[in-house]
Image (cartoon, rainbow, N blue to C red):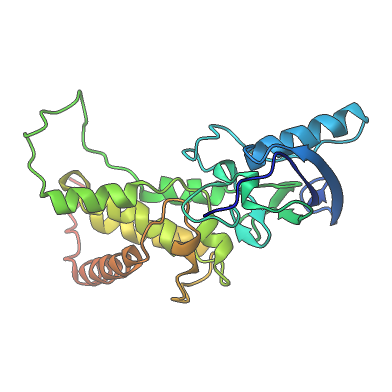
Length: 267
């Protein structure tokens, strides 16, 4: 039987503090005492920040929004792992029962050159936004909700597209990869559209533009060690990377041998 969680626990947070982008940073220890094991990691940071504020000290800056594992904003490196020790959860879904009384918990921002630190635990992940802007969309007129049976899609493909569409863009895959690769993120965004009929019109242009933008943002290449899928809070499979590579090769081939546009003489 699993031992019952203690009524309360106390830990020491070793937090990365950095005043602003480009400034020197350092780790600072903060005691966090008499905490409920049922508190989320972000709730613990709230408690610590309340204490710092009452003492007139600068609170720890960290990003958060939905706190339901949906938005991907709460990206923290906890004891060297993106989002903490548990699999399939974001930082906001990590609970203190995952730790032991007296633990020293190291908290730092995601470390990757394309994710520069803004302040403390907050990083600038707008590189992901620019990759999406390069092609992570469809231009088909959506209109109102279509009839469910108007465009039949095999269940296997629909399910696979939904698996890829779970990506919340948190960046854990980048932080986990020793080469800071964004291949799993791009693969998920390319695949969930490429698997559906609505995404076919821009399929080649999408994969070429998104991969080119990814490379231009400074993300590294895939090292095929699959730390990305292990760290993903949605457990998105690294199999999508193989699908991305296939789409990219085919799009590159078709682009190389596409007939040149005819010059109409300016008419």
